[in-house]
Image 1 (cartoon, one colour):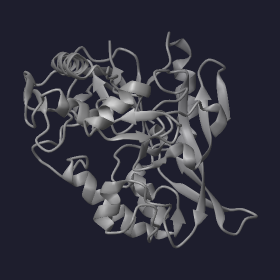
Image 2: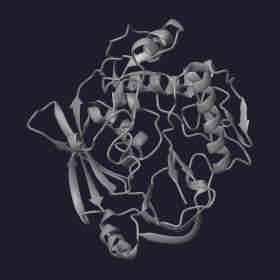
Image 3: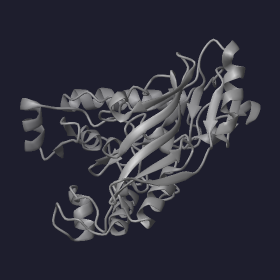
Image 4: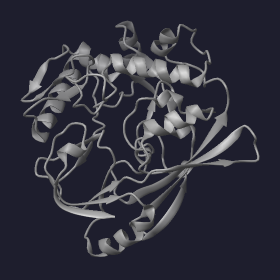
Length: 344
C-alpha cells in the first residue's frame, strides 16, 4: 500500500482533466487492504475508487475524500465438472484488455467482443461493460467486494449485482469496493455469434456467424479504431472517455419514427430497444470537430466528446449540457450522461 498526498488526478484519467486528490492510496497487493480499512474507520465517507480513469471526470477543485486506486493484478483459471466450462478469478486492478487477450490465447470464449475497451476488470460490473453484443453480465459469476456499510467482505452473485444496460448496484454508489471477480467461460474454437453488422462486414461473414475468437477480436479492434474508440488510435482525439452518453431507450412511435429516418435502433441484451447516441448527436447538427466550449469539441472521427489543451471539468460539463439540449430539441430524445464524476 502506498499513500501519497496532494496528487494531481488529471494524469491518472484519459481526459487529463481535474484537480488534486487530498490523499491517494494505491494497492498492488490485496493483502494490504485490511490496513486501509483500519485507516478509514475515522473517515466520514467511503473512499472514491479509481481504476485506469477511462470513464471518469474529475472536478476542477479535486477530491477531499481519499481516492483508492486498485492496481492489483493476476488471474487464476479453475476447472469445473463441466470439461468445456472453466471459472476465471481475476483481481480488480487487472487491465481488461490483458484479460481479454489471455482468455483468447487460452481458447476461452465469451469476452472476445470486449477487445480494446480500456479500464480495469474491477470496473466492468459497475456499468456492466459491453460492446458488439456481449456484456459482462453474460459471463460474470460473482463479485467479491468490501461492503463499507456492513464493514466486512462480501461475495455477491451476479444476480445480486443489479446488472442492466450500463448500470448495476455499484453505479453511483460508494458502498462497495470491488476486490476480485469470478467469470464463467466456455472452451471453444469459435466465438459467440457475431450480431453487429459492422463487425460482420469487417470479417466478411454473414450476421450470426461464429469465427475463431482471435479473428473477432481483431475485427472489433479495427472497427473501434475507425471510431477513435481505442486510446492509441488517434493522437488528436486520445483525450476521450469513449461513450459520453448512454444509448437512450426508445419505444413505440419514437422507435418507428427514428427507424424511418435511418437510425440504428436495436434490441439490447437487457431486452430494451435503444438508439445510438452518436447517431442522435450527428442528427442534431453536430459535425465532426465541432467546437463546443473552451477546450472541448466533437471528435474528428466519431460523434463523441473529446478534450484539448485548456479544457476544464466545468467546460466539459457545459459541453455535455449543450449536446444534451440540442439533441432533445432536434430529435425529441433525451440523452443521459454515463460519466462517473469524481470530486467536490
